[in-house]
Length: 279
Image 1: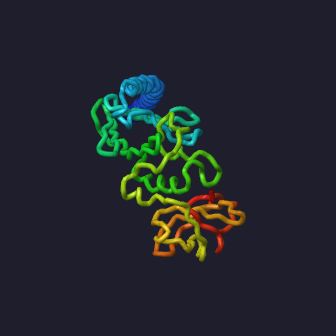
Image 2: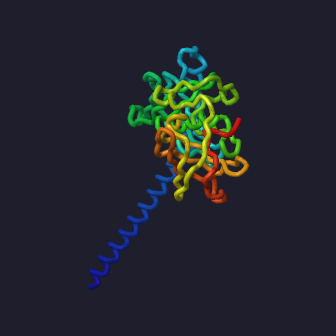
Image 3: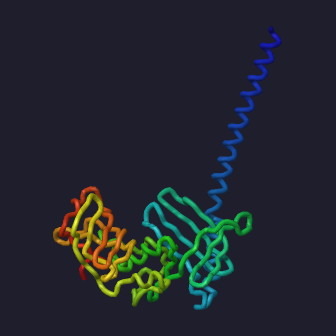
């Protein structure tokens, strides 16, 4: 009986020791990870400096080389620095410091820029694909899934947010240094998206309301397309939200309302619906 008790005690001590060692090992891994993460800022800066040096040595032929920014200036600030030989360096900084980073290779395929991440110096997962868009002297990198959003931004007069006048460029990667350059003509979009750009402002009215669905007297004949975002203007032409078009006929369309905030009044028949505010 005594031997059994001693055996159980020994096993208990071994188990406690194993748990303690596992905890210490986990703590060491966490601390090492935090230390390496702190060093990553230095590595990132060194890699970005190499990219910037290559960019400075390039002529005008490599149109996509540069550093691009998108974000809100607060909790999300994404930077992509990219060049042909050095590849790309991505970072996302927020209020608490570095949130994420990646690096890898860059390759232009037609009008697209393909970035692939590196793992142990071996190209691995695809980081992203971007359409190179020139608009006057400005240059953008636009993700395929954002292309309709970009078209809507252009049709809405782009330079100012439809609600508050805040700079809307931050929704898309814009080459650093291009922020104040003039927008001239139309952006160089793929044909399937270029045809969606409006020549002039269009405006109509809400003709029926069914919950969050609204019927509009604007259709294909006015340039409306599925996925188009129209600004909803209430009394005094004040913007209270938008309608994302889901159905389009020749002279009419149907959209789903997206209110600006919870204080916006419910949309009503007779409200204006426009591609952008009045000039």
